[in-house]
Image (cartoon, rainbow, N blue to C red; front, side):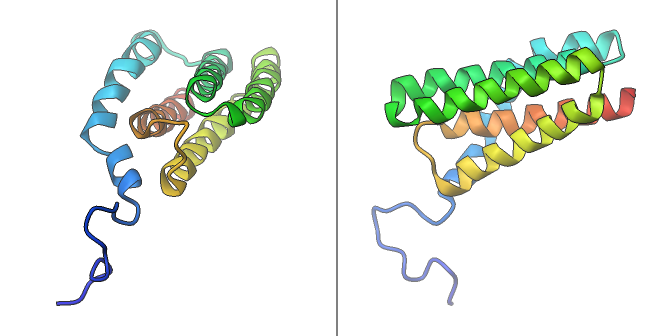
Length: 147
């Protein structure tokens, strides 16, 4: 029987193994542990604000800077630029209460984390990128539903 893994060499990773690991059980648990303190206050006392969504984006970008500093210093400048962009866009969304910017930012961050998983970027642990995908999508849906 032929499949896409027929020519797979023993001892090497299967294609998209990081994607599968990143969206697996460990990431779901991490999303619950990390996301619960972020999502519970908004779910218990709506509505979600653009400031709340911006905080999630800025916090995630800050974690990326720390991960890059410890895991791959060549990525610190890129991650710092992303943090600055998150602060500027998050600040604009917060000041203007534009939840649409916040939702686009959350969904963009989810796509960015999926890219990390597909490309098997090493400075971001797969469990963290996967947890961010889940948290970002849930947060975007919460903002959309509550506004």
